[in-house]
Amino acid sequence: MRAHPSIPAPDLVLVASDTFGTSLLDDVHRGLAGQRKTLPAKWFYDASGSELFEAICELPEYYVTRTEMAILSRHLDEIAATMPPGGTMIEPGSGAGVKTRLLLQASVPATYVAIDISRSMLELGAAQTARQFPSIRVVAIHADYTRLDRLPEAVDLGDAARTLYFPGSTIGNFTPEETRAFLGRVARWLGPTGSVLIGVDTKKDRAVLEAAYDDSEGVTARFNLNLLARLNAELDADFDLARFRHRARYDEALGRVEMHLESRVDQEVTVGQRRFTFRAGETIHTESSYKYAPAEFRALCAGAGYECSNTWTDAAGAFAIYRLVRSASATTITPHRTGDGT
Ligand SMILES: C[S@@+](CC[C@H](N)C(=O)[O-])C[C@H]1O[C@@H](n2cnc3c(N)ncnc32)[C@H](O)[C@@H]1O
Image 1 (cartoon, rainbow, N blue to C red):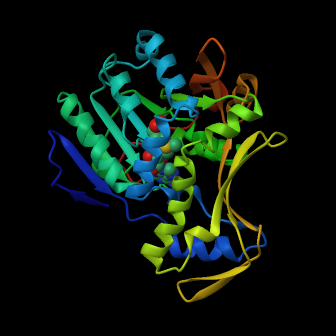
Image 2 (cartoon, protein in one colour):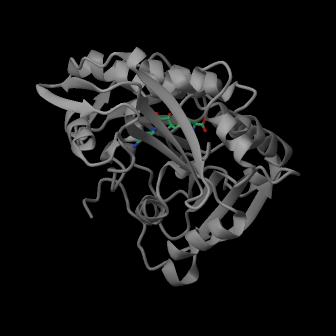
């Protein structure tokens, strides 16, 4: 871990994780060599990908962001009251932090920890939060949150009550098994008294879901194709973006929207000295976004040792925010003190 002192905002510390585990090149070689080609969704978020994601949040078809914001605004005091003042808020996948700053207006923790794989958006979002809330100590961690077993030593959170804030239905990018594993892992960041505030998209009409991931302006298509542009720029790959098209499809049986990049023609592409063959119509699966009925999501959390103390939703039930606490039977985990080497 390295501290970066040069961030132009009050009381903001940036910590870079060296523990990304897999490199972009390894992930691409592994993902494109398989029978069914895949690429991990986390690699969407270079500077352009992060900006395109912010543009997606503004689209009329992408009901996710505005519905979650509306639920948050409507129940702000009640939601904020679940977060003890003077505590710590930890946000994996913090991005631009727009929802975060709404929440912080009603509940002011002593420390806010932002974690993101996108260095540019992490710096931007965390700096804006630090400027708007000068009384909060803001710590920004550049890391892959799926690989962060414990928070870095520099964070030093002491014993203050911890809340994990995970909005945006980012949890939907995990499979149900990965969701259980992730919730189990973050229990170590939180300790037995910590809680989770999480925004999760619900199941709904196929046309609504597919339009949200395939908008009429083509912004989501640009977001998906940007992954290939990133491979060209960072790995000297030779993808011709015009020879691929964006696809989004709801798989009702699995309860997930899948995004793919479909090859328009038979072709070969080189990435880092290796050649990969694509048949016309063959796809690279780039993202899954799981949708959960409330009862289904609560059952999934129960399997990870959490019970749901509150659910907030909109009138149509298009999105839900849950507060999770550790189940009595799961609270044998001792809080992890950063820096104690345990
Ligand atoms: C769907 S966006 C949500 C952003 C924001 N929290 C919101 O609600 O609008 C996902 C965010 O998580 C980050 N991210 C995705 N995978 C990640 C990973 N494995 N580790 C750290 N950050 C990740 C992305 O850079 C992006 O900022």
